[in-house]
Image (tube, rainbow, N blue to C red; front, side, top):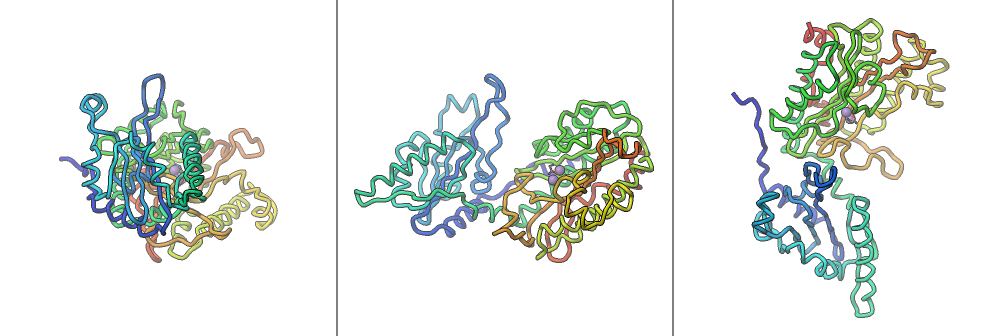
Length: 438
Ligand code: GLY
Ligand code: MN
Ligand code: MN
């Protein structure tokens, strides 16, 4: 029997409503340009697998390269690749401007070849262009020049953009997840659970990290995911102390812990989960000690993840707890205040406790407004991922702790006073992990 829904059909009405919402946020004289992703060369004439730009997908649900969406208060439209039988035989079916117009109930659609002549017309009479800089520098330059050109027609009584700014309001929309989006991330979490549980069970000394990676990827693909939402980190032994380790080419040894940070992407939303387990059957005593500290801090941090709490508070409390434990265990000296003030804890805990999660693993949205940490709101999804890392080469650290790297990460939906752990089913108690390996 097929266990999981392979694909989620998201109704066009979701995208139509989002485009309407953007329209309603724009004032007179404001226009948004949003560009679809482009194909990227991997090597010579081989391309990376195409993934649509998250913002573009969020507003359109359309998986075609090169398209351009524009929205103003009065109208929404798109430029897209033209229907072309010969090209479609090689690279796949294109919707074309008629179908896209109907699908998204747009006011107007054009072939992409009309962009150069139409962009000046679109900018005319708008004082503000909303646009994401920094994705394509040629495009940035072109738009600045075009805006200037349109502005220079002021003498004819017209005007063009004086301001080009990032459409932060779009990211505010993405921060708040709908019921439908929460269902999609929950499915990504479910598939992630299947992958993580298999590798906890099947790993053993002598296997290579990439063998575990291949199991994760196979399990994700089998259930309709497109693979990891980011590069899988499979780090045995001291490799766990390299935070962005993606080489995944070492062998698992007896007494190694294995840190796996991996999340399935499903229908453009990703999970982000870290688990740590022994390569063999049991944790050593030193590994257990550190694991329990991190697990305790992670459970506390999940409990702090409530509506109205400043996001940075979760990190501050987690740092305090971990610093206190490090001092208790003799890894840090001095008062807890000085440990925190001087940042000496950073030798063992050098990253943040969490981030927003959604279509992008480090999802969009501002963490601070005017220097003040924002409060969490219902419907946001964040990760909670404290960790402790013991430099393998630091001879001041007792040998049995050197090279231990532990991070435990779950995906949490903010929901009033009761955080919902979307990845709770993935084992993280020492007893559960050892039972899976026995
Ligand atoms: N996997 C990236 C992170 O945990 O932030
Ligand atoms: Mn994360
Ligand atoms: Mn992660």
